[in-house]
Image (cartoon, rainbow, N blue to C red; front, side):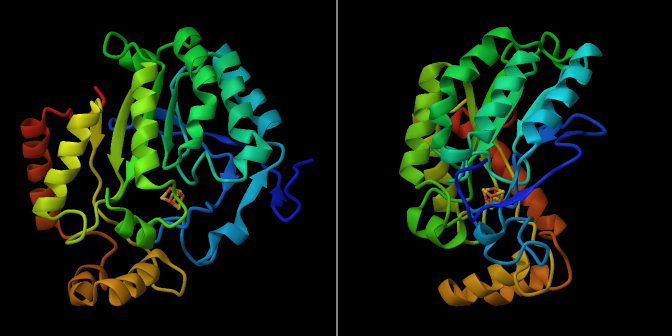
Length: 300
Ligand code: SF4
């Protein structure tokens, strides 16, 4: 039994999800989530919403039979040689505070190693350092997916997510995540270990972390750390009900950036996405910055 008494327990029939097509940005063919919901409580997160409530920490569930189910699923996929990158994780962080006690992500990595699958770690936490030993073994022993043959030797990708590099902004929008300075240090440690390591700007916050000055500071920092790729993402907000990401973001903008509230409402009152003109300008700017700072805008 897990040692955290207050944590909810659920059982699942399936834990490894196969995607219809592998993702050309994240290169994954499978997603894997050890927890249901996420205690980092990022306001913009698509998992925020009426399904979980606005304090997800109370709602986090641990998938108690996940290792047993995962072993069966991996064994079957390995038998058919259906090797593909597994993103760990897509709808939670693999290193929630509870992970220290549950060791569920670590158990999953042990199975991933046993069945020789490649893995893409996606996190806002410094706890990933605990598993560097296991990630080295996966990098050494796992099989490359056929769709990446000749294009990528690595069997481990480590991506750190940021919506900003300013701690005071992160305190508002991603309150449960590891502090920015620690995340940067962990990223440097991952690079030093020799893992292919990059950044996901997930998501940049319009007029807050996407300003000219902020973007230059961000890219200059990434160049300095020697990061190997940066993946872009614009803001998407769902739901109009109390506790939904749109509702949470409107409240935060009203409190901390009242001058921006009207802009955010113009964009998101009738849509979940930023307008097309913003998206186009963003991608153009992103390409210019990658060129200027010598950072790759893709993993491969
Ligand atoms: S860490 Fe990721 S999954 Fe967790 S709340 Fe933040 S964006 Fe959502």
